Length: 177
Image (cartoon, rainbow, N blue to C red):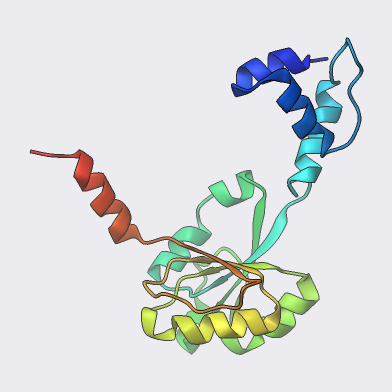
């Protein structure tokens, strides 16, 4: 068991706020005793969609895409990259890619069959908008965009941009000679 006071102290919030927040996940605490740790853990995991691995696809199996496919952090955080897609036929026989690799024109059927809602985009800037259009049409609702392009998507689709050069520029601000 863990008390709301102990959790609130660890989180840096007031116990009353913590109890209100936890109420969104259900009622499983006991007044005066606290919360069963395992039940609390499972409720939070389920509430955050982390009780099971979330399916994700990768679009673009070039150098960056292949490097990201080998990154173990996605799975540790609850994301399962089911497959990668690329338009270059020569990449489709690359045995170094740790997930099934499919041609780009099969994205729609794969997304529907596997109930995928998120994608990682690693294509050159000139192909990024068409790729995201295809993803949106297939039913993708969230895109982690590594392409150096500003993407236009409908309001119900979320795009998180990762610009590595911008991140390095931000870092350089703090590293001065």
